[in-house]
Image 1 (tube, rainbow, N blue to C red):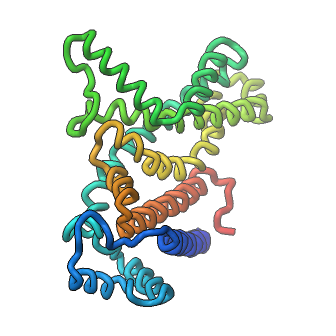
Image 2: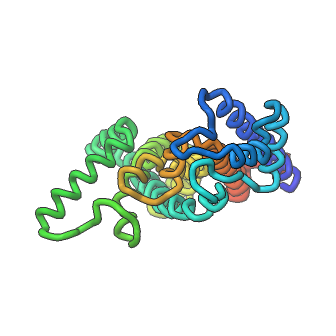
Image 3: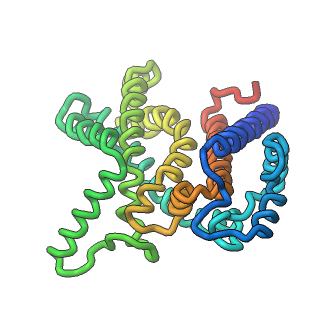
Length: 311
């Protein structure tokens, strides 16, 4: 187990290095000057910034300076926000995105498992057909479209009720999180529902399930101990990427619902060519995704004793 974990960590570090390198060279291939913006810089300030980040040096030297700063956990200072470090932006606003992402993944995970199990139990009957129709809509419709539709629905609901049933946007209370979390987790829930349905249908026809039925084991016990427990394993394997995907995929949802998460600053950084913020948040989210994949792989090995992760 320790050997496997160490191997996964090393591969994860290599992946993060590749992400950081691709981000660095990709940003330097973008036309434009990162120090040219709405605010005019004095020659002295520009010279200091060039010296700090090596912008007056060859690209290879800039690259090694960049890797050295990342290795120390330093993502630099924003080019457009005065005296504000990228680390501070991530520290202050990522918890908002993470909170929204956790609520969305809880909604997606619980809903995906329940709806997937239900469609498998009622295969080819009206609950299966109705749920799978909604699943196709959830996968096909983009999150920003669902966000706009949900806001329109909330406006009509609040007008009909004569008050605020649920806030249309903003951040501050748990009621502000409900609708964005549902919108953000909808596509993931639809994907998990399909995955859970397929996995349940495979487990239903296995020998150990038929043997349990032949022994007279109650149907509820067969479902909970044999079908659900084994069918949920493929769902667990995709939860790591799903968590990171929901967190990063919340950028558009955060903007639509005026949520002060990290996504707003990432979009602003792209519009303003704020290289340090773009590269810092990209590497941070890439490392977060790698960490979640490794964590889920280790948990999967602990849950299913048939998986020999030590090999």
